[in-house]
Every structure is written in structure tokens, then in C-alpha cells.
Image 1 (cartoon, protein in one colour):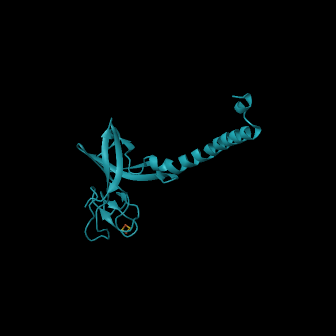
Image 2 (cartoon, helix red, strand yellow):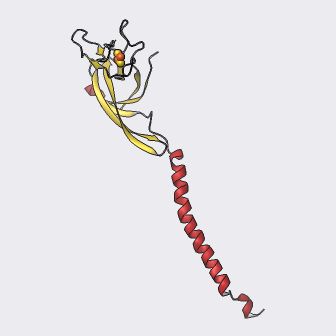
Image 3 (cartoon, helix red, strand yellow):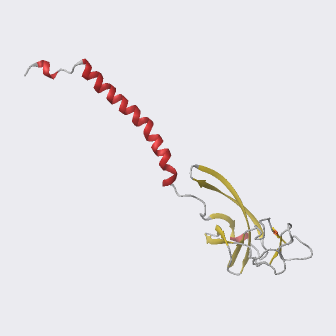
Length: 166
Ligand code: FES
């Protein structure tokens, strides 16, 4: 076997080198793009997760307003969402109600109308709800306020999604 057969020609050397460098550069460009494309699918969305909202020790028998925020992921778009809950405690039961009026979506407030004390009142069309969220007959809303899924862990109230009561 001659020594000449073991030598790599200049052309072969350039071919191997350019192929190696080109492959390395292509992988450097393609891998981040592939990760970007797949990443949101692999992550779990935080919408509907349980969020820490209030300390149980601060709850009273009277509904109190609590605001809370969480990060919502919609595919590649992340936004901060702020929601409100009216929460009260009755013995061992903790009730958390959505402030969104079930008539046309205005915001209700507790004890906001002197003529109708101890009720949720909607200023838009005079909708009213009992303390437990039940809509009062003769007012525009036709269904109760939505109720948050509630969980207590280590003295803290966690809320999930607000769901219809019927
Ligand atoms: S939106 Fe509340 S009564 Fe109409």
C-alpha cells in the first residue's frame, strides 16, 4: 500500500470541513426554532389553576372583596389577568363568588344599595342577588352569580375557575 492512498486531498479536506461546519451552523439555527415551535405545547397552561387569594383568618361572615392576579398563557402569548372574588365564611363553609353580573356582565358590589341591604347589587340595570349569589326574582339576572372552585391549604384560600351554580 502506498503512502499516497492515505493522504486526504485538498478537495476532500475542504469538503469534510465545510460539511462539518455547515452542519454545525444548521443545527445551531434549527434547534432553537424547533424548541420555540414546540415549547408552548409542552408547558401546562396556568388558566384554571388554583390561585392563592386570601388568608382564612381574615374571612368574616360578611362578603369581602379580594383581588388576585395570575399569569395566563394562550399559546405563545402570556398575559397577567386580575380577577375579583367576594368571599365569606359561614362555619366551615367558605363561599367565593364572581362579581360578574349574570345579566349582561357588569360588576356587582355587596351592600351597595341602601334600599336593599345585605344583597349584591348591580348598578347597570338594578340586578340583585342574595348573599349566596342566588338571583332575586323580579330583577334582570336569570341565574345566580358564578361560584369559584375553592380549596383551603395551610390556612390560605385558593380559588380555581368560577363556575355556574345551576
Ligand atoms: S348587567 Fe347587571 S343587571 Fe344588567
